[in-house]
Length: 85
Image (cartoon, rainbow, N blue to C red; front, side):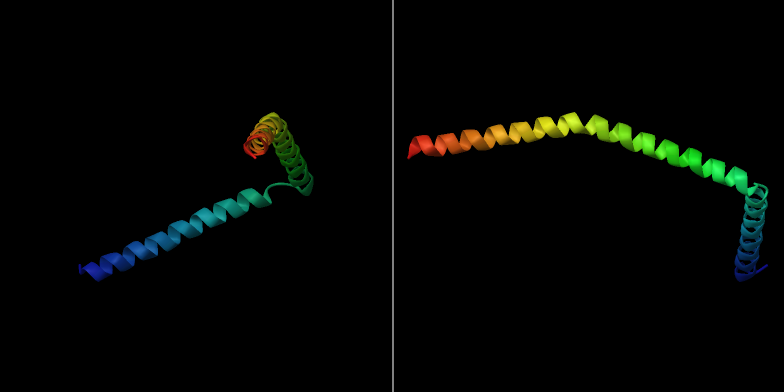
């Protein structure tokens, strides 16, 4: 068998395998009722909003602290410049 025939057969086998995967996924997707899909979307949305709120609340104190530290440094610089004048 020539090498190009082997490459062609491997390509055809890849196309067939991809088709099988797509068909299985489509069957699995169509097996849900609209109510089940809606329920899953609501659950995912609730999880996403909860995770976002937790991340926001966890990041808030560090942002406040860094803003305070920056403001303190700026004020010290201003005081230092005023003292030199």
